[in-house]
Length: 101
Image: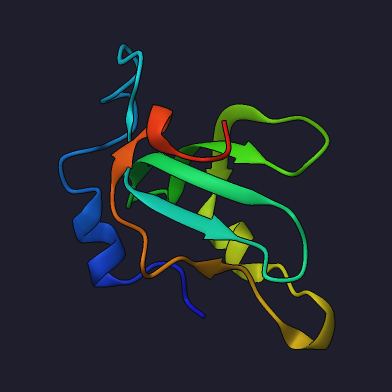
């Protein structure tokens, strides 16, 4: 699955990098997850020029806020050829409303 699409970029039209940095409870616009692992990325901001996003990641060594390359996520290949996926049913919500925080 290609994570970057016109629809994906439209979600972040008003949320470039640093646009929510002073928000105590930022809006999570998209969710990307590993279908065979435990990593989940909750994206709050995105730069279409560099294809970088700011997100909260869970399921790795430590849950934390940070920057991630969406193109790098697209290049990850999991067992049986599976790739990272975007939760197409995700409805934007405040970070405090996500189950994984």
